[in-house]
Amino acid sequence: MAENAKPPRPVYRNIHVTDIMSYRLPPAGIVSILHRISGVIMFLLMPFIIWMFDTSVTSEISYAQFTAIFSAGCADGAVPGWFFKLIALGLIWAYLHHFTAGVRHLIMDATHSVSKEQGKSTAIITLALSIGLTVILGAKLFGLF
Amino acid sequence: MSQNYGTKRVVTGASYGLRDWMAQRVTAVLMALFTVVLLVQVIFGGPVDYYRWSAIFSQQWMKFLTFVVILAILYHVWVGVRDIFMDYIKPVGVRLSLHVFAIVWLVGCAGWAIQVLWRL
Image (cartoon, rainbow over all chains, first blue to last red):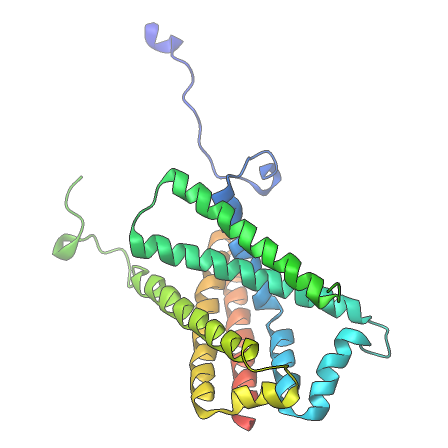
């Protein structure tokens, strides 16, 4: 009967969307999920990115349209300029995060030196770099300096 | 565990993912390189106006590099979103529709970007 007294074995199952909030993500996990989210943001905003490329390089007139959307907005100001600056800032963050997290991956692949401590410290460096640069470029974008 | 590599590897399908894994890294390096090349030209060329900005992309070698990077982005993003769909979207019909959407979206965007580039 001793076998019946064994403590119940832990049950591992897939995380359902509803219990995401009750899980504590380590820094590496945060970097990982933000890598996905930033990728999806750039995927969905790709037409806007190409619109910016198109208008900024095609002609002087289109270049003026490109700069005007961030100051005067579009549809006679119905959509204000700061809204597009906010989208641009979102893209800047997405790019910076995806870039830094990607370089982190490449370094881990190239050096084969992966440890728990390293995973944590490089994740924190990634977050600090991408958020820090986003804040600086955001301040520049909104004319704070 | 018994040997499961080389000629004794258990065959599970047509692809083992190595090609995508490698492609994801090669395309990433190309895009990172492009970022650095573009940044250097923007930072060390004086104030940016329309003429300076469009002149950067008008150089033949820059068109060459940008074209390759557009194709790199196309493949990189395909592998990325496909992995995300495979992880989170289980119903086959929905997943197939999203895959088709992603391909249409990406090929269309790549065509637009190349059109802009080759007009310069």
